[in-house]
Amino acid sequence: MIQAVVDNVCWQMSLDRKTVALKQLQGHMWRAAFTAGRMKGEVFEDVVPAVRKWREAGMKVYVYSSGSVEAQKLIFGHSTEGDILELIDGHFDTKIGYKVESESYRKIADSIGCSTNNILFLTDVTLEASAAEEADVHVAVVVRPGNAGLTDDEKTYYSLITSFSELYLPSST
Image (cartoon, rainbow, N blue to C red; front, side, top):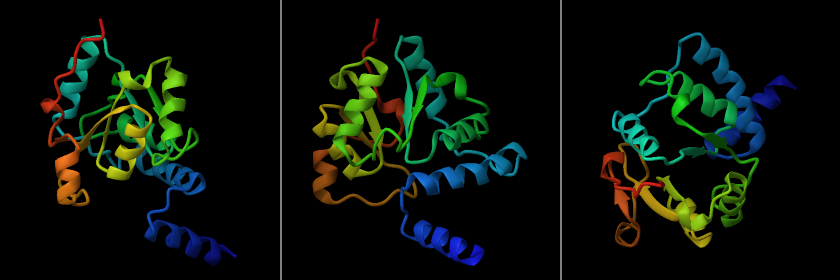
């Protein structure tokens, strides 16, 4: 029985499945590793200064990830840039909906009391970008080392950034 569960988990991971149960299991496993100091969440060095600047301008910052909220808090609470949870106003995971479904972005906007067209969503996955745009959310595709490549059409269609410092956002005040 145990081997069947292990095999199923390995199979889901090999297909990069985004199931809620798998992400929750990963979150539980990560808790032990992060709190013991064996793992740190990788945060690119341009992220924290940019987020601090946005927050100083009155903007709110939320994380929407296929990783569970618990996993997100572990990653940002034990990151290569230290504990940066104070910079994040809230967390969303696939409990609100899948990132490739436009309705998920509408639900997030409703839950934070914001119009979808006042939200900028940063992603490295164009299917997510397309779903966000369908919900009238602004999108920038983040190009980082290790991300999946983009087609020529995607490179032309989407706003691309390689660093958060490239974003110049209007103040919310």
